[in-house]
Image (cartoon, rainbow over all chains, first blue to last red; front, side):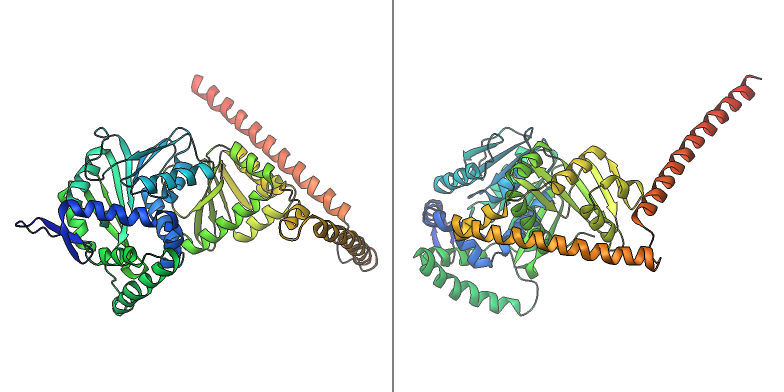
Length: 253
Length: 209
């Protein structure tokens, strides 16, 4: 959970404490650095399983033809691509990301796949979305919430832009639920990942940050509570891969 | 029950790779224009959804909203549907139920049937044109011989079984029989319709009296 020290206004950046405004800049730097090899690193880190996690999120999103869907922290666009294919010509997907480099990569990838015409690219901060109230059937955020400084603000913003009856889908790393997985996972995150980071993109620090940010992200129940505070109802979560990852879903009535 | 995500993911990847090898098939799939086909496999109690679009197909275990068409059958019947040249016989015989937009189901099947992959072209990506062409010639030659050999073997065996041992009805006998069954079925349908018309007329008369 992000903790703010009222006296010196710091927040968590992984395990480090940094001034509030610094976090956004630092996270930006991380993603500028990894943008080019993001998919490759995801594949290596999760051994390709991240695609299956995203597939699960896609199914839970319940996307249909003609819908309007906002995909936040959409980065390189793999979830947005699939959503765009489901909503079809009459639908629309808005791919939002705070990081320009990632957004550019996303645009390139989608164009390469021939998915044009129903996708819009918007550089935006999840904490303060620039869209009108009640304008989306669904908001998705895959592996992005842990990087948001003020998660409550982001959740409220997402609630605001959802149509009544619409839903939010949050796919994110969470707390492993199977005993014994924890230590192995720790070993993997804190030793293997930075090593891979150095090997593949020559940037172990960025991957150390990513591993640490996972640890300080709220657990399954905490996130559910935060969603309810933001106004979402019928909130539930689904554990994937023994809780290493979870999909949270909530509705706006 | 939805099949495991890994399985669907693999099938989807394979299906798209297959489609991608024949550009015409890909285009025809795109022409189906964002449709959803639900496939329900009886006996194994599995269901999945095939979504068509300009990039190929997506195969999902879950879909909300109404599919455009539904195929329902045992896995075996589905496979026979895939293999046979004439889908209508399978569908008419009730092995595979199709509901909703039946034309969609037919077109879908047709696309799969008519996929024509230029294997030589595919191979050339890996080996280069000359080797691929040589390989192609060899394979075609072999295929020709194999077809001939199989044909004559089939013919020999078939003839033996039909004429000598009278164990298996001749193809023409089977076809004649099936035709008669079809005719009978149509007659029954017509009769049923007629009976219903008469019944309606009778109840009309009794209402007016």
